Structures are given as C-alpha cells and as structure tokens.
Image 1 (cartoon, rainbow, N blue to C red):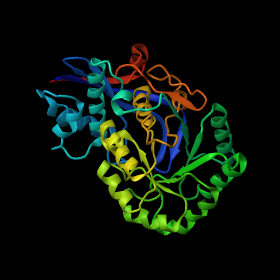
Image 2 (cartoon, rainbow, N blue to C red):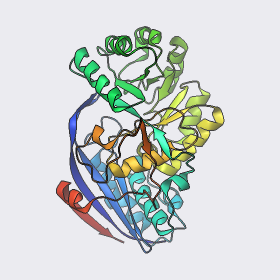
Image 3 (cartoon, rainbow, N blue to C red):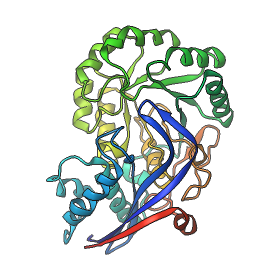
Length: 368
C-alpha cells in the first residue's frame, strides 16, 4: 500500500451549547480532517487538537504545519505493509501525537476499507454496543447544573462526569449527589486544575462515593498523583499524563492511578490506544474511552475502541446531538444508554458531502 496524497480539510462546527472546563470555554470547534488516498482506497482521520495549547502542548495550526512539512512527506514513496508501520516510519519526528493519530487513523481507515474489515474487528472489539456517559461542563450556577444533569439522565446516559476547578467542586458534587441519589454513577474531572497542596480539600470529595477523580494534578506530576492517592480514598484516574503504553505502565507501577482514561488522539492513535488497553488489562486496571468533542468520524473510531474487553466503565462516547445539531456523518443516537458499534468497512461511517461542504472553511491537497 502506498499513500498517493492527503487532503487537509478545516471545518467549523458550532456546539449546541458552550462547554466550559478549567482551561477555557468552547462555543465551536475548528477541526482538522484528513482524507488519505492510497493506491487501494481512501480513508478519514480527525485531529483532536484545540485552537490553543491549553489541554496539551499541541494546537490545531501546529498540527497542520507538522503534517504538511514533516509527517505526510515522511511517507512519500514508502511501501507500507499496513498502517501499523506509520509510527515506526515517522519515529524520527518527536511528539505531535494528535497529528500523528489523525494521519494513522486516515491510512488505517483506507486500509480496512480496501480489505472490507471494520475498526471494531481490527482493534479486537467484543461488544456490538457500548455504555455511554456524558461530560458536563462547569455551569453558571448549581441550579443550572442540576437542570442539565436531569436532562442528560432523561436522555438515558448511564454515567455523569462533572468538570471541576477550585471554587467549583465540593458544592456542585454534593448538590448532584443529594438530588439524584447514591445509585448515580458519578465522577469528576479536574483537567490538572489542582496541586498536591490541595489534598486536604480534595479529600472532601471522598464521602460522595465517586467512581474516580480524573487528572487532578499537572500531567508531569506522576509522583504527586501517587502521593495524593495515599491521602484520598477516591480512585485517581489519569488522562493528560497518559501519552503511551510506557507512560501508563510507569504510572500504574508507581501507584499514581487506579483507572486510566484512554484518548486515542492524545496517545498517537488507535493502535497505541490498544497497547495501553492491553497493559492496563494485564495489570487489572480498568480503562474507559475519553472524548474530545469529536465529529461522527472520531466518534465512530472511539466507539469501536470502547468495545474492547478492558473498557469496563462508561466512556465519554456521547451521542452526536450532545455537541452538534447536525453532525457531518449520520448521527450516533443513544439507545437505552448505549451506542451501537459501527460494523461496516473501516470506520463504518463517511462524511455527508452536502454537510461537509457547508462547514468547510479551507482545503489543501498534498500530493506524494
């Protein structure tokens, strides 16, 4: 298989409502899509980098630049046995995992489409549908939060994740737990907003029987997370700190986490995501699939990944309408708290040409 060219397409997708976390508020998404054309087929990948380097060091213009100047040209004239060789072929370029993930996904989609195989089959899925949770951003008030959570539970979501930050943590968690009861699967996500000095304050969340607290400390502070886990009873889940199977193994060995959130874009793609899954399964550590407000393209791949056996907790694999009134693919629709795993070739979904044209802001073709 040879890559003959890649189309880099920017699209603008408004969100149904603002989504606020400890690092900022999003009202729309500027998204980079890749369409990889090989001598056998073509496939799609979605880059999850944000406009600014606030969640990770990567940002969308930087991802586009490194793809244009280094990663895509790095595959020129290369005969690939499969997409699994891409990371090795491009290993001379350091970092930029989100950009690499988008390219690898697009080529893998093309490969699987040509062979009539699905992402789910390739990754090793054992389920045909996956349980879904929903991420609830920081709200303007506790009553607004309770109204939002009530609406998501009415839609059928099986788990609620609350974004937290200093000043918005104990009280909103208490209010949700008191309103909706102990049976609600509830977890929180700090997105690195705290420091180890906040351990006593974070311990105030222990009585609320949370599934986990996600990434409370900065991503580099693995030892701090290990120390924090000794001071609180709520299980720590790492997100931003997990960038590879190697980093996951180290964090587990050091006692820095009891649960791992796997985001394929953050770790360099779905093949590395599967390796992280395998490491965690071998260590008896539960995993779940995080989300980055993906369109239907990224959501399809995430749902396939979440169907692997080690994904024992509901992920942030929400329905399309959670974020977008009109997705670029046929929408993913919640059915009794679950999403169906696509079974068609490759991702199992394709962009709708008319909708894609409506939201496209620019295209660039890179021939090889």
